[in-house]
Length: 475
Picture (cartoon, rainbow, N blue to C red):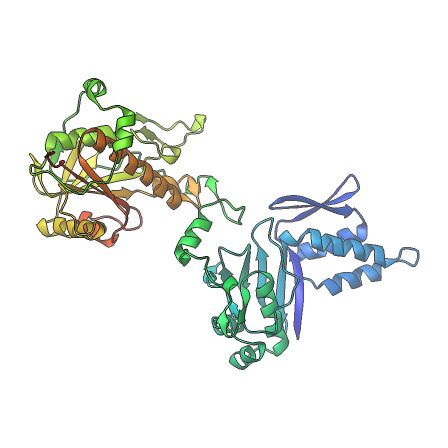
């Protein structure tokens, strides 16, 4: 036997506020109407655990006295259930076993009222399963619900719904569940936006990903915005109580140190091109001069674009519980999590090889790695630039992403991509001002720089690449 149950989300509380029944929940507070003991008792039952709506109605009828008709209280209950849809969990049970639970994830979550159609239906292409707590969870960036799959028979139904099926075809594929339970599951998935009609056996347009979107990009976009989901978001310092913040500057790598030239910024200010000239002439240039970039030019370039200008200690009493740096480009929360790793192909005064840039000491540290490692990075740059000649220097932008995730929850990766874009534009503008050939790369294989520079693939993640070289001599 299939039973539909309701419960209020854990942590929901009821209050009599000046004669009005107010329900306080994770999205705020909702007033459902006049406070009556019968309605309050019914909603407290929902707060205690799953209960059927028919069972609540029967409680109200039983409690009603002859002089107090039950119908007004039942009307108040129906109104309250409608008003609290964004904090009500909906459960489907079969033989006293919960099959699935729909959990609203946002205040605008609206549970559909239409039953699943008799025509073939199919799961949305953006739907995915993952473990959450002790159960599997069906989620989608296009739904404001999570459906907890709490019985293996429901999971088997999801597998069958990966292609368009009718109710009869679903029943023949999942024989462990009675027809009414499968119908209830289909309706739950349809009402929460996971199941869509399919016409003529093909997937309906509503079930497909939006045109131009891949699944992973849609999921990343949804996760990068607040959305009032049931997750931590923003500067909430999720790791503050478990580990110290990562240092503001990456620890020095072992190896030979190459001190770099520090330009006279006063002279640079007097002799540089105007900002408008630099901005208007910025372009991706993939042709390089006969003579290589010099070590002095490379030093001046890194100094102007990426050095540490200031270092400030943590000041918890001022709301800054971690040390920060100031650099020529901005960074979310002043985290400045980005590091620069260099594969030097040709540079007058610097050996061909791999290096890490120390922005605080303004120096390069030579890293292990033979000519073949440099060649592999250059090969990727050639593939990304349509076979352009190798640059003098291939820069890999690497994120120490925990500098961000120590402070920000849910969107640290999105922030580091934004920071990368800011840094890449700064590299462009400085290169243009210095008369160099510069070009950002639009993609690449993350494994290549991870192996080349000996990175931890989840603590130090490649997020960008940039090419630098001397400019061709004008004819």
